Image 1 (cartoon, helix red, strand yellow):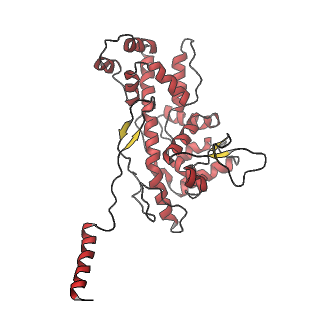
Image 2 (tube, rainbow, N blue to C red):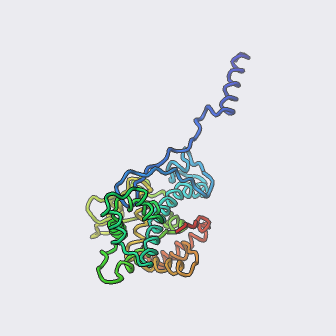
Image 3 (cartoon, rainbow, N blue to C red):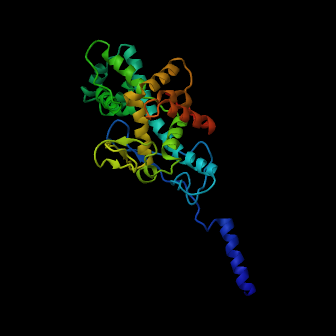
Length: 326
């Protein structure tokens, strides 16, 4: 090889190292678009939620923004770090959406306690067609993103009904105090689920992301469905059983469904009571504490609960606990 050829090769190599020409540099993903939680209105654009812990971990060609291949052989700790980095932003996004819903309910509860009826607020907003956007915003001055939306559509009651249906609540009654009682019960359901619990169950149910249902159906939580063709048929399903394992379009959709199940299914009422008691006493709550309310998540009952709690402790998953403002 001539000296000129050697020089050119060295120059290209140095340029690649210094300027990052090869391989292609990894860039921040574009902003995500999600629908507002209470309507089919114009989607709200939010910035990507970066993992707050741990630092991004590469596994093959994957990063925190691309699903890693969790089935690859390799260092188990690297796999776990990649698992955390991939799921945590989706968990945080889901909890932030719930926090906005909860803040709207808390604001409504405070107004009702002051004697302001829901109908009065609706009449002011909806029966006065000359009211301006600024006046509507002033009426709902405590509005969060969801409350602003309710003001915009001039129907707070409809927003409350939609939220109730989302969390599997029966319709509000007409008796005196029924609305206040309804909001109080709904607040038991509209609350965050600690990341430590979500991570532990996702890891347990999906084999740290390696299961067929996680890889092919974005289902990290072993969630079942019961209509023919609704999901994937388990290979070892017992004779006489007809359940399938649900499929989701995205992992975020699967996380949302799991959290909503925890927050709305009657089987997890105990978990919600534990969380509410901590709220009432101004105490923090974590995944290990709430896991005691998962006795009916698995047919294995208490053994399953103990395994989830052990996973939280062994992997120090409480470090992912994050406080939210509502």
